Length: 206
Ligand SMILES: N[C@@H](CCC(=O)N[C@@H](CS)C(=O)NCC(=O)O)C(=O)O
Image (cartoon, rainbow, N blue to C red):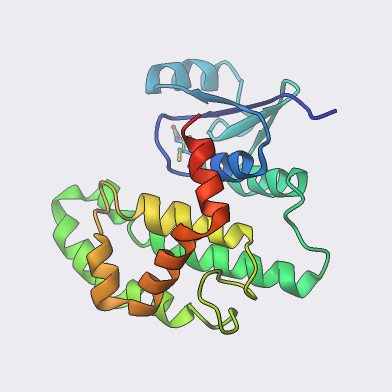
């Protein structure tokens, strides 16, 4: 029996969207509970969240926190962790390379007045790093980031690079990828057309 799952987070992508996308891709049913600040404070002070923060995944009513622990649990349930330790590590590596470039945009939330500077700096420093990373673990094809096979690192690329970086407050346009990071743009372009991302997009709509 699949346990009953409820994911609790704010009504933003933030740290939860990769978890939502993995569950959606795997066709694992979950309740996507989005709470506002007021509800968060009430539930947090009421001791609903193990470490006082979200995301929290309730598994048959029992709360699990920390986004990485929740993601790992979701990947295990989705049977998306290969038994080969080195392959699993390369997949984690790629996923974390993508997340760390998003982290470099974190200043946008704290210093919105410096947005232009943070964005320009990101384009000249972070973007070339991911562009150089593309192809390193990939073999000949540039559709999937690790070993020509679809993995959760590709779901991370879609979630972080395509969905989160291109929307507010990051606002990096796809044409910036094409101009400044052609290998990355080609990878994302191929990935978006892949049957796996097409399947995920269908699940997003329901
Ligand atoms: N290390 C935690 C960090 C969780 C975290 O920072 N949660 C934020 C939202 S992204 C939160 O709950 N903020 C409300 C608060 O701390 O009052 C994780 O990865 O899950």
